[in-house]
Length: 84
Image 1 (cartoon, rainbow, N blue to C red):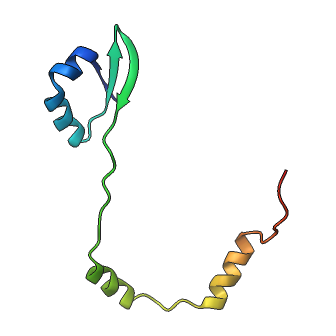
Image 2 (cartoon, helix red, strand yellow):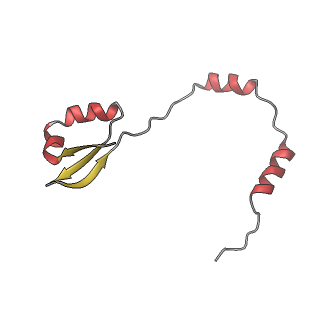
Image 3 (cartoon, helix red, strand yellow):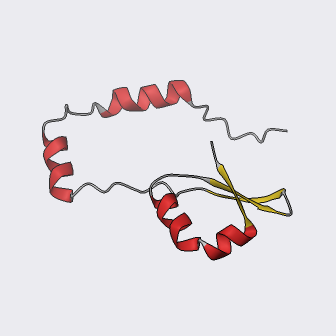
């Protein structure tokens, strides 16, 4: 649940609030007791080194192109008629 902070707290304690955002906490900013915005941490992307990805795919099973294509065709319509 997001913690409420006043506009004044945000201004005066921005460093501490930023540290808490970095730790995953969310905030609702209020002005005169009325919520005016939200501060939520960004999801950080996790990167995998290229060498690790290549090593994982090296042991993956081969992809049967025709079976893959058939599966896609079974799921997605190829009809180009506009909806509406």
